[in-house]
Image 1: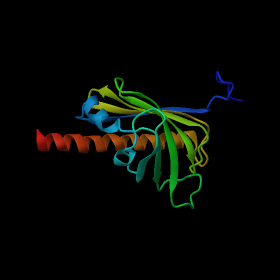
Image 2 (image 1 turned 45 degrees about the vertical axis):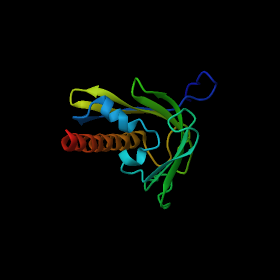
Image 3 (image 1 turned 30 degrees about the vertical axis):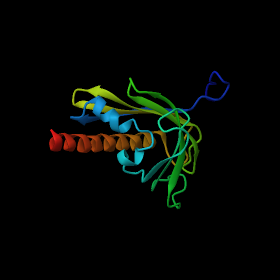
Length: 169
């Protein structure tokens, strides 16, 4: 049985962190792009739609809708979607935390933090999470999937930022 949290709820059983370096972009350049809570579709290739549903953009309480082709919980469904609430933003620390509030992708409780950190290569994308087991996934498979997403985000940052630096610099 999982330990209980301070509010009496059972603590999430899955935890993980992935990190991917981006060569060239500074943490501030990367955060200027990734810090927009409702722009995940520009940075994560498997997110085809990301839009604000309610609340003020970039403010805690804002809810976004994200959809894409991956749905391990119901492989026959064409689209996996989730509604995610922004919990906190740490602009100085270049990170934000969010939770899944509704989904068809097999999530129970899921809370994550996405941030940008300094790295000798330039910067690194860091994605950490706490969750109940996710239907259709093993913990190792889920962490491996997030690793691929984080590396894809780092590559997109390199392309977007360094191309613009080359063109304008």
